[in-house]
Length: 75
Image (cartoon, rainbow, N blue to C red):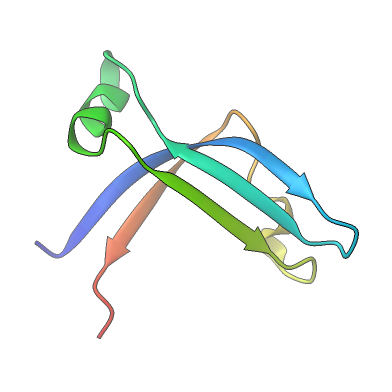
């Protein structure tokens, strides 16, 4: 296996006074469609990622949106 793909939904984005933001996400869960396949393979998961204000990614994550997360082994 070369990689593992998970799918997460952004539940919240917290903003801090210094300009950084933290996106909080959970693994998707559904009994229908593509999300059912992800829920079967990875039924639970949490992700919290903090992004510095000086980066292009600062406004990438939005509550209610879903995102793929690909894991590949680091060499």
